[in-house]
Length: 539
Image (cartoon, rainbow, N blue to C red):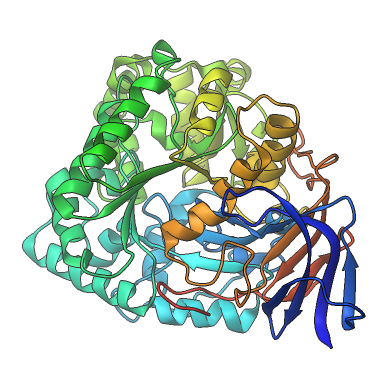
């Protein structure tokens, strides 16, 4: 007698080996048997005829740190087949506060990410442990694998200005980093093109990294120093940090955003390959869209953000500094002017500005009879925070180039949200809802990619599980935790678009998290069997 039997399906086990036919038997949240047992009985039997049985997808790069609390059923991701969200990317994590005030990180970091957090949510945690316990008590439909954000350390220690961190600040960051890693955080992430993480020098990052490099399975994950002409140097810096810190490297959302260098993917790959040949463990993640999602603040000079949003707003009220900021925006960061018609507003906090959602900066400027630089400054002032936007700044050929390389794995760079509730008003990037089915449908089935189905599944499951050093997840194997996605290879597809992003993917028939069926015949069962995973744990 079993808790669950999955019969008649085709297994792709997440190891990049060829698919095969078999049944799967689940007891006590684990895969107890793979094979065939005559007349076996179970509390529930799933007929997977004509379907693919895969490990649950692991989204290696997400920003669901708070959305998993506000939307505990995690619909946009679990309808993609995702069973584990890796959070804390781009230097943003919801811990540690560094004191006994949970709002230190909320007010000093997350409020700057635009429409990121429901104001009705009460933050009551200070450490990784407390954050993990809060989520598990509240409930989540999928597993969460939290990373520690460098910006959170900066806010907790006071190192948020455009200057070198002091000795006292460095000591506190090291202490908090070690505390969070010991409690179970998987790695330490940076966001080197966004403040305050961008204020950190290479040497400072290396020093903090060295302090945690002795922990088993730890790695360096980086949103690198993006900018005009930096598509090669940003990788070189990541390689330098990895080598000098004696730590593995996970490079975040690899892309080319400077149109002058579209097609340079092979040059970028050579830097990865040369680093690997010299002994560095280095991999990267990417997503299958020709647009990015970020803050409008990334069009503004970095120095203007020193000290946080209040200091930034003070500078805008200073006529001389405001003119300097406008001038640099017009010239473009690193000297490359923006294409304002390609930057589209996706969400705002100010209820009076809901009508600008879906419009480009150029369209808003024309409506207001302003130049674009003044327009974005006014939008920022009106919102009292960073306005979220979509940047249409990538090329399809580069997407395929980065997807097909053996060092690539897949991450949405999106949040677990739902079509109703707090996150339903804006127009988020469709990657929130469609990343994994888009790869399996539009790229694998339609053969836009050179990858086989087995290779693509490996990049979604076994490969990120290896990077995270997960002990018993990421592949279909006896005695492993039963995180399983069952999909129809003929119908799986993303439905979300930039114009209408709040649409769940199709073709995901069943999703099993820790042995419990969350998506049953395409329907969410409104249960929350997810766990907060911890580095090195077998749970």
